[in-house]
Length: 284
Image (cartoon, rainbow, N blue to C red; front, side, top):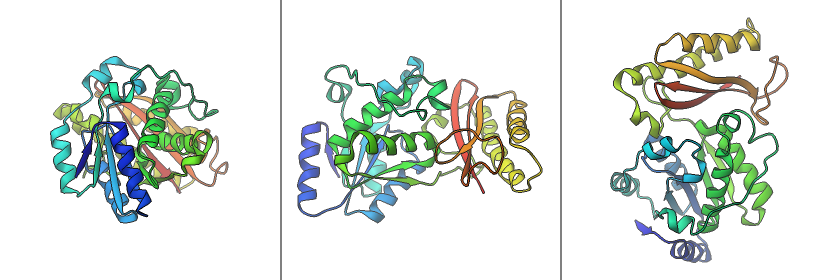
């Protein structure tokens, strides 16, 4: 595996490969790699000649300094996993390389960055757009892969390319959520849970799956189902729902009845102890 620390070297190598007619798949990450990340790399390897991965904990997308400070970092272990997956290229810059000067750019995604995660984490998606736009310039890939666990982020990045970077012509590929055996969506933040919290965290996905079953029976209204999810999860002493919304999966605008959208999705953010977890489930 080739490892690059500077933007210049990484871009020169990617452009050289593209001149050779190679297709390049790109998986941007913040490290602390788990099976969810590795599944994205396998999708990329299936679709492309070359797979590139980046590892960079981006400070501009953290609206809580403590969250940034505690975010797990384990580059040596991550490199071992990448080599085992036969990834071709790793771009692993430091903060000075990515932000030689402050990034003051402001992005506008209409309503999309102002609801759900955008509402509860002000500035988060602007930071995501800053770093992803920089990474796409460094790694001008054929395709880039993102997990559906961060569903709103996937829609934001798709819109980022459409609105701000159409000349790059990067295809944004969404990949399925990868879950633990008990259903918990895989996340680097799961490493920060105590054993007792980890057991409780599985309830989030279990209640979402139950909500999906209930939605197919047409016996509950949207409002009743939302209350069921929130109340059931909040009964656990380790868990506290920040939001749960049922929305149109294409726009993420909330719906009030089951006939408003062809494709529907339930999105949740909940605290397990001090750790904030997100998940979602698509409804039939």
